[in-house]
Image 1: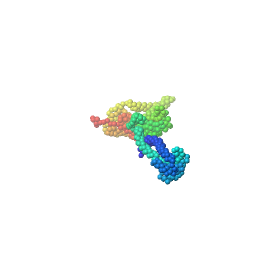
Image 2 (image 1 turned 90 degrees about the vertical axis):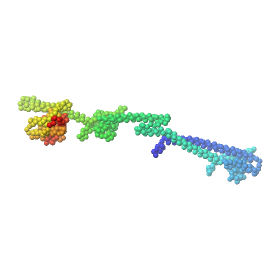
Image 3 (image 1 turned 45 degrees about the vertical axis):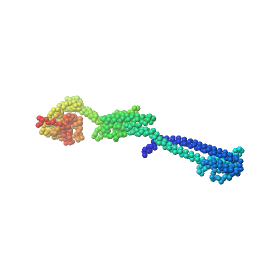
Image 4 (image 1 turned 135 degrees about the vertical axis):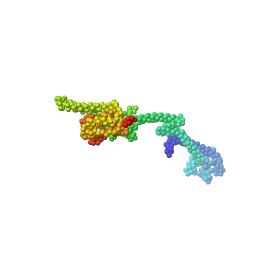
Amino acid sequence: MNKLLGFFKSIQLKFIIIYILLLLIAIQVIGAYFARQLETQLLENFTESINDRVQLLNYNLEQSLSAERDEDDPDLEQDVRSIIYDFDSDDITEIQVIDSNSRVLGTTSQFDQDNIGNRTTELRIQRALSAGNREENVVYNPQNGHRTLVISTPVYHIETDDIMGALYLEASMEGVYSQLQDINRIFANGTALAITVSALLGILVARTITKPITEMRKQAKYMATGDFSKKVNIYGEDEIGQLAVSFNELNDQLQLAQATTEGERRKLSSVLSNMNDGVIATDEYGDIILMNEPASKLIGKHYIEVQGQPLLDVLGLHSHVNSLEEINEIDRIIIDFSEGDEQLLLKANFSVIQDDNDEMNGFLTVLSDVTEEEKIERERREFVANVSHELRTPLTTMRSYLEALTDGNTWQDETIAPKFLNVVQNESERMIRLVNDLLQLSKMDNKDYRLEKSRVEYIDYIDQVIDRFSLNLKDELMLTRSLPQDVCYVWMDQDKLTQVLDNIISNAIKYSPEGGEINVTVVKNRHQILTKVSDEGVGIPEENLEKIFERFYRVDKARTRQLGGTGLGLAIAKELIEAHDGKIWAESREGKGTTISFSLPLMRKKRGHQS
Ligand code: ADP
């Protein structure tokens, strides 16, 4: 059905129609001219032949009528009859001869035989007899559509030129018209045949012309779908052939261009997907037109979800900029993509994409995860602020006490001066401790230290440390231990671990109430040894448990400072335990007590060292 519809719209049909129309017009013009000429010619010939016969008849009648005889001489009628019957033929339907008195002398018509001897009233004959008019008319009979040539002519006396009578002749022209009809019919048949043959030829010719065009149209369709593998056939060197050659060249060029674009696209896409940074490209209106996988991971949305969406909405930039134009001026923005506890800070760098005419036609945004960097930066700032604060407090105290001493004669006061000097000494010792702790941390941060590790029998070692504390312990506190009856070897830096234990046990002592018990437990596991220091002190709120290992963190700032703490002890302990491939953590119930535990890897038992 579609094919048929296509044919009706095709150039092929137009060709055929034009071809046939031209042919029809040509045949019509030729036919009309030919028919007209033929008709004229045939009618002329007919009239001429009739006229020739009329002339001859007239001559014979003149001879007969001019002969000396009586008007009633029966020979005359006889004579006339024999003359007219001689001239009777198929095309002549009637010949009538009338004498000067309008009496019919003879007729060839079967129906008018009775009129012989009667006077005729025919006007043409009357005019021929009276005025000597020769008339020649074509009479059309509307009843049967026949045409008849009617000739009336006077017959003169051969000597006197008197009108002796008249000759009336009717000749049917139907023979001529039926001959013309036959010729027209033959012509019409010929025309139909010519049109049929030329229509067939037209189809062939149109096919020849339109075939390459149809092929090119098909090829164009293939090209539109990106298939450049086919070629159009070249049927000649005419304009259509040249068009086909150009078409094939165009196909090749397009294929090349497509391959280049595809190659570039692949390169770009592989570069984009292998980048660590996220890349988002927008059109000139700021709507997203491209996004790589890392960007999709960073913002937590698939490209399909954000395609065509405004960049400002997707990145939530409305709090930073009011319009797209402002991005132009901003070099980078830190965007907070944190959700709940999960912190995520993204750094977005913007640049404008310009075309060859320096017209802006989009934006390129490069996203990178700067959560860690920002955290380190924040910690660094906090650390500097903390150090300054921690140093300023003892320095301020020292300054005010020294000012008080130098003010007047207080330094000479034997009761106040030693107290004030004691405070100054305590504060300076605290500062020294703080600076020492800071130096140690700084060394650890810079990996500028070495652990002097050796094989230590751990249970014995712990025993000694606890003994040392027990000696100096206040009476109201109890220090108990539960150690395994075993021998455990740990590869460790004894001094550094002593520092850790000192800090943990002294914290337990510091925060224990009067009468409190401090217990040191050592548990030996398969691959590691666990040390727990528990007290019955104030405890640490649940939410701060993790934070006590951070630098300068104190649960109760005023109280701990009073107790002489720097807030760095557990931070150093954590670093040292981790340097021994161990772990440190805290458990506590507020008001009930705290347990600080750490684990250390055990040395593999060697033969010979086994107990
Ligand atoms: P400090 O020198 O101030 O004691 P630490 O790093 O040793 O610093 O301890 C950090 C903080 O942890 C302390 O300020 C204190 O608030 C809390 N803390 C540590 N050990 C205990 C404990 N056994 N009981 C209660 N709080 C403790």
